[in-house]
Length: 592
Image 1: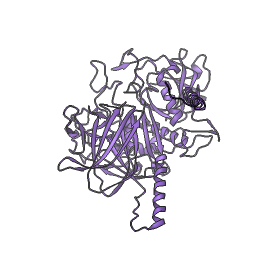
Image 2: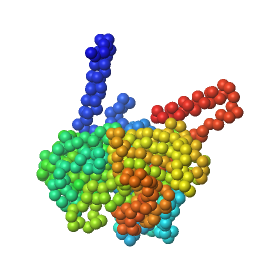
Image 3: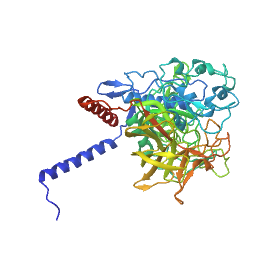
Image 4: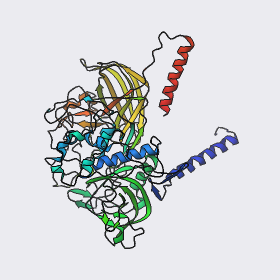
């Protein structure tokens, strides 16, 4: 017999169930149109995206796209003030261009000579935003003639004029190879700029990655890439995921193929709106991209065209570019305001290079980040390619975070602070969404390769592929010079999951993927239950800069800016008051 319950309790339970259903249904209802340039709020119509920028001839579109997405999150979350007009950019794309840890960006003059590439991807932005300001020694061998041993990074503000994108580059009309001045060292932003915001999450929504929306069946091949076709429009699950991310956190980045397939609305028969640029590249293979932009909205009723007269589909993304506001012109009318519409059925936009950023105040974190590696720097050699294609031709399926992986569910990083440090949080990443990670911090004895006492433990979950921050219940005092082992155990639905932990390839991308210093990172072999040094692995990096090399676990320790309170000698009511204040502050930080 079922236990008896009062009728009023059953009624309340039923009403609560209905409320949950109503809330879930409301969340599932996505608006048919949305524009971050003009969002209706309780305080009026506001812009949750920064104004259009112009990258000039520099091939760093991805830094503009990433900075715009970060701006959008700061504006939406109220960390930056805004009004009815899109404000000036706040996060420095120029600092991201040259302080992201990519070898080509470390010596910017090289990016304009010898065929070097100034381009990048969302995983390089992930590597940048997960660092604080300041400088760290990078392990591994290096060539001092071409590489550096220390470098800083992290999202910084444009408020320092030295961080602004140089007009000398934006207004340059020649070729990259003969860029002047060369070298461009006088134009570089300060490396040790204080980090302006702490990044708490970077979600990567590329279609086809583990736990993300699956790819459809291949429809063919194109240029060495596996090709897929999309025809579902607004009903496409990937479209709905990207819309939800924009509603939750602001603009997202996306890759595209910019082979000039832009069509001015005046040439499109039946166009619903004149003076608008349309883009459609549905014939190109997924993953075949050469440009990064930002999705700032959508319209389910917008008709797009694959040529001057052919409708490619209904429903389109509103995309913000970084080529200024007058790149596409048709004298005397300008058909571009720096944005364009792209079909939901596009093979690349909204499907590749999709990253969503969440930022927060720096409080209560310090500027120093404990780490063994700046990365992520480069893709592991883990691409799906068409049979017979060149080995260096990437396909669609790659490493979600730009890093390699190991067939293990338990991994470990050895962190050694240079001075006494209060540890406030751990920054980690996952190649598989929906995981739960238990981080255990031990003292470590390098001589005996053994664990000491357990210092602290924190368990956190992350629903998406990418980076996430796990705060400790209270700052943990670390002793300078004492090595600490941070063990990460990855589980999915309660069971150990292999291949979720990201590993930076090589001693350092800066150092050309040379040898890894031993004793920095380990993985627990599931077959032998032995800890294996990752320096002994042989990853094949997607780069021609060096041989295969070992790896380093991607894990960072975030320090606290609020020192621990020493109450020795503080008596009576004052001690109680100070302790209560400290507990309140810690509770407030955890709630935030």
